[in-house]
Length: 519
Image 1 (cartoon, rainbow, N blue to C red):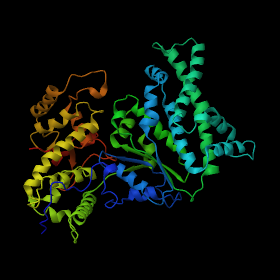
Image 2 (image 1 turned 90 degrees about the horizontal axis):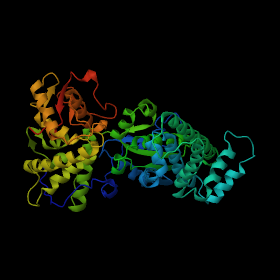
Image 3 (image 1 turned 90 degrees about the vertical axis):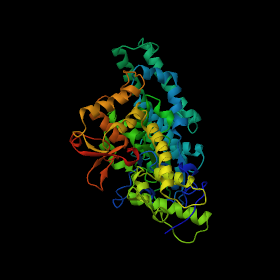
Image 4 (image 1 turned 120 degrees about the vertical axis):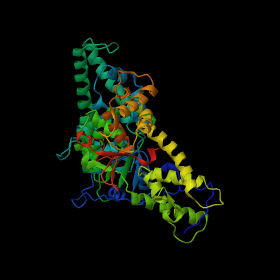
């Protein structure tokens, strides 16, 4: 039995990958990591095209990207800051905003901006020389032997934006040229974007916008990508990774174009899949990707071959905690023997082994488990080993932080998520089926929500209060606070592959997640 005594300034790592000093020595190498690092594009590697890393908050997406950055076999690693490079520009451009306000579909334009943002990262990685020598190389291809690409079109695109091609002003210049072209054509037709457009005017503006972007931007960008693939991509010589990892930040959730914006990225990066030495990795939260699918912007089947869905089982989370506890003990306390989570949490809580009790109250994400253990360590005073009371005290603090994180994760989709989660406490039983809940109890739950939810703007779908119990159960499942009880040992919680409930699930038995079962 282990009797190790901890002090309240001990911890097994930080919750954010950027500041987690334990990550280098305690990284758990998953099949996803191995797959991303494998640049073999042959049939022997069916996962080669997988580039979209999807997972819930705290599932380790950023940690994965940070570890890839440190990998020696990667020759070039770069990243795109979506907020600073593209989103702020789109959001603050008056002309783009006026098109948006008039219902003009700008997804193809957003795609062109993403393509340029990707090109200015990929080109220097493939052509490690001066920008001018790259421009010259493309010009030299004009008039040569007939190829599968059109160098004239690619060169036209370069010449249009040559002065600013590789700096932040490029996106502004692309927008300005479009504005100048469209304003002239729209003005000739007597259309004023200053007011609300009629149906016929909207159709004309839409046609002109789509035509311009397709003709002057997308078509030429695609030719440039073909040239990169055939003339610059030395397969086997380079391993280039470009990542985009800030698509779940708060700046995005407040904007009504967020789904169009990310959908355009998912379209743009596909254009680069043929460049075998380059992998563009997109890290995205599950709920955001599901939001795109729910708005019918794209079909999820279209992305199946591109997606790595990050998920963890109990054994893997235990291994992560074991590694980190050992790192703490050996580095801070000079311990010599290997210590496991089970050695330290060797007692029972409510007839359950304490280590299982802790893991059952995480949502099986590394950040949850690290956080819970850190709360346990904060309760230590250097005098006594960890016991039941310490874990239970830590659980209260962990629950508060986990609930705040859950609300933050889902509030952009369900404005009243806090009330929905709290209403679980009104249920009479933690194991239940829809039929087993009395109508009175259902009404109690819905009344609780209605009494506490703020006044609503009924014109916005996501802000409406859910006042249908079946729909409320679906929300509970989607956010992870209830699961489907298959057996006493198998509970199915929401995941990328099983994100929500359908009508066939409604007669099943459900269970409240142990952390949210506050009875």
